[in-house]
Length: 137
Image (cartoon, rainbow, N blue to C red; front, side):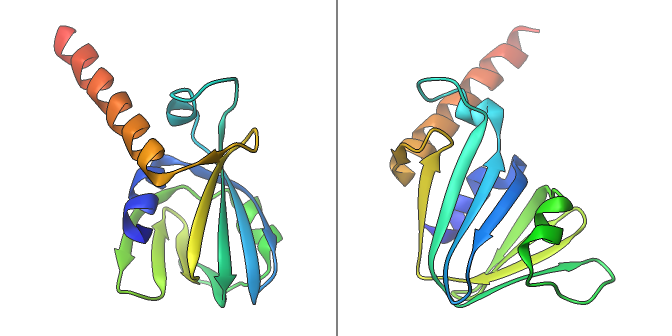
């Protein structure tokens, strides 16, 4: 699920990051078109990475950063992911995030837990609707 989760969230923008390494990292991601596929108002998701043993962001030409505020302040937008088993590497327009963790738990920004199956179905529904709209134009 690691690869598939980040594939679905790839158009999102990181808004904040909190937590501890080692421990749990929480990443708030704005992705309003996908969030609108779920009940109630909201603009994004929270991803909790449990048992996180590494979390590092490197802007394109800078040294790696493991402090969260500058990473979130850069508000990186994901463009593609690379997967071995561990660590997960997420390439952003402005740099690269590398993380090692056991599990990812996904929540709506309202706090409601979302399964990966629900997220994948919502994503598929959005893109099916989008394709149908663009064919009509």
